[in-house]
Amino acid sequence: MRPGGAVQMHEGVVVAGRVVDGRIDNNTEFSDQSHLNLAASIGAEIEHGDWRLVPRVSLSSAQSVLETPLERLSVQSPEGVGYAFDLAGAADRRQAAWLTTDFDLLDPSRLTLAQLAIRAVESRDDDMTAALDVRRLLDRGSGPLRFTGLRLGTQWGRRSRDYQRRDRRAVLRNEADGIVGLFDATVAADVFSDLVGARPGPWIVSDFARVRAAFATPDARADVVFRPGDLVATGTDLQNSYGVQER
Image 1 (spheres, rainbow, N blue to C red):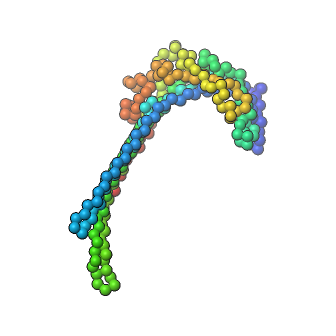
Image 2: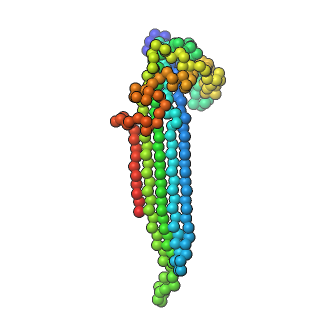
Image 3: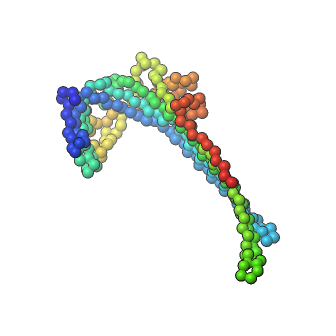
């Protein structure tokens, strides 16, 4: 521990402390999600003589997509920032006593190391089932053994899933522009007031339109807004697709 730092332990766990050479992150996430669920079922009852037929077909489809992929902008303070915290008794009180820092959370010029991580996700699940139920009343038999009806049925189903994810990192189009211009607002002054008693106050947040204009992905599209199908999958991208047919 650096000179000036301190920690308070309780049953082997750090519950409070003062850090003199730390680093503070400012993180913002952007995302727009779209979900479309469709379901339809049609059936009938058909009587032909002594026979009764009940066919049914059911279809369902669920599609989810991040219209704006999950964009995580992370910027950091330089090393050497001091902060202090006291979490003793926070679980019982449902509130931490304090979390403070002398770092100016409203000054974007003091932030550096901007990183933009992007995750585009799209999935589709389809299900189709067809069933036929055939019945006929009977009155046949001999002695104590009698047949009162005949019932037959068949069912066919197919399920499929297509899950695609692309993870990319974007870089500043022009590093000389810096990141100060990305920030144009602050969080509410009472943010986390129910969770932390003494707080350092609000901090600046970035604007997505400015972030989108300032960053670019290394692929040909460059735009940080994309869907999985816009990019060729690599070995690090998560894909999960299958089809199952049952009879």
